[in-house]
Length: 364
Image 1 (tube, one colour):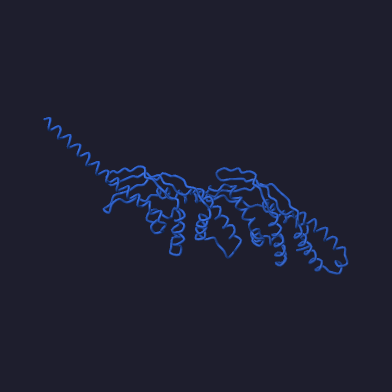
Image 2 (cartoon, rainbow, N blue to C red; image 1 turned 60 degrees about the vertical axis):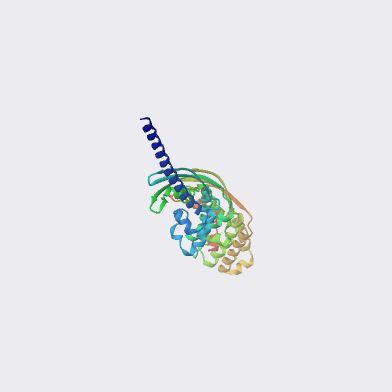
């Protein structure tokens, strides 16, 4: 009876060891599969990376074609150049397995913030041209340039990896959560309607304006439409006014208040003082009209001379005016949008539209 008990104990022990050995073997196989797949992210090959995760988490599928294959590979190489991982836990139950890994990847929130600002700036810049558009291809080439020119820190995330056993062995189950983790939630951040604050939006718009050439500024602010007159003079007036705004425009953000969908950004804007220009014009025009040249010039001649005086006064102006105003923004579920109104236009133009009404009969 005693020998029989020993035999049963030994049999149970061997059985447990056998099962433990089988379980350990499967865990090692699972771990090997995960390591092999994660190592491929460091290969920087577009086709290989697509086997590991849904590349739509970084790039929309419509961009993944032959014409961009090299650019895509470059983006992946930059995105995963600091990627590392450590497998912390492996569990196996029949044909299912679960792995917990600690991964270190690019700080996607910081990258997404910079990318969103840069993309908004490019959208604003191309809005002044009827022949240029900012395409999806442009946006991701912009992402590539951004990652090449700026150093980003890394963040640590926990990735839950599910696997299933097939006839060929263990395979990773692709899930949205895994894709998000492996890309540091980049796509989630870039599609967040509130990633950029209302203050960020205003700053990008005004900084882009400051970077415009006078010609681009003239188109962006529609400066040719200040006077209802012939095209040639509208263009001349728009050009000199754009030069003035380009020279004198500056701003300072004072305060921001917001709720879920509405926001107000208080700013101080400094621009050309158009009322000062009009006062200077009136003095010079009045003085000239008292001369004999004015009497002999006739109606058309006087009109042309008054136009010349106005252009000259704008070109020689050195005075500015500052104004505090509230810029209202609305979040439409995509981003914060500035609600342009007359107060903003007047501040940018130095109240040119109202000031010029005083002399419109002279020059129109």
